[in-house]
Image (cartoon, rainbow, N blue to C red; front, side, top):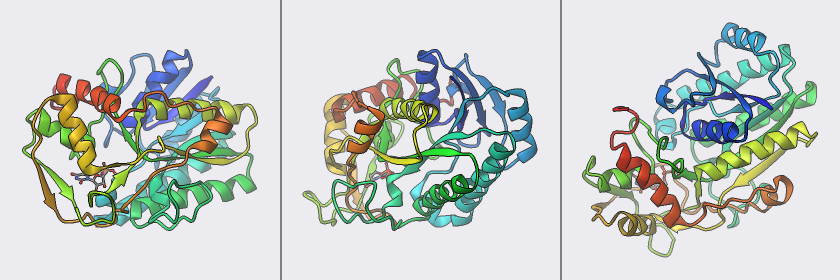
Length: 331
Ligand code: UDP
């Protein structure tokens, strides 16, 4: 198949591009390089630099690449903390970007889309593990904009010839097996990269955001899922849509939760380094526990995450961080 990947220079986008190309699919990438990196773009993908909110640009790409089978859409802002400080940035990029994209898809008769959603759509969960049918009440702007994106797809698909799959990721982590691409945000805010930056000496300490949650050691519990397993799920979801699958929403996680302290302990074991950790204030908008049930993705998409031990995940991330202590900046 020929797939247009929006945000293919970003973390999950670039890993999905690598897996698509490994499976001999054709890939076209659009990325504005605001948070993505040129160095993360696979050499066999065709790359257009530009912004989703630019309809003229989108139409030009769609006209040139007129045999696209479907779109995988990662192009969004995705930081909980930043979304609380600058909510309108999130409404603008995540919602206006998607609105313009939908207009261009309709005009160019592109009818299949798989897109990134998030566990943050649930807010404080009512049950653990979380099911797709559970209530969605986001506790931060990021989750709210992703939920609004999901709803935009739902209503637009009722009026137009369009089918979508929404993938609600839990905590994406890890890196490509050979360590050539991995997680690199600037500034970095995610737990595992920050811990590994302490291990590789580019950061002094990790601040643990709160140790007074109602969990076994007081720190937040998350479900960490390898980015290449997420990548596989996107390809399966696109194949599902192309085979006529109906609109659908799937959780993607491992179904196992780890506390922040457990992640730090595992990273110490994997890296053999001492990792300085300091307890600090809770971060606004953080739910105590997020763990997925991914039963539906396993049943419907036949998704089979294989890189699922936390130790293996951190090992793969450590390979990337030790080979590239400054992320993509020195490549
Ligand atoms: N966290 C932390 N210190 C940090 C970054 C994250 O204690 O410097 C915690 C955060 O509160 C959350 C977990 O680690 O409970 C995962 O956070 P991350 O930002 O990686 O992902 P999120 O869960 O926000 O998607």
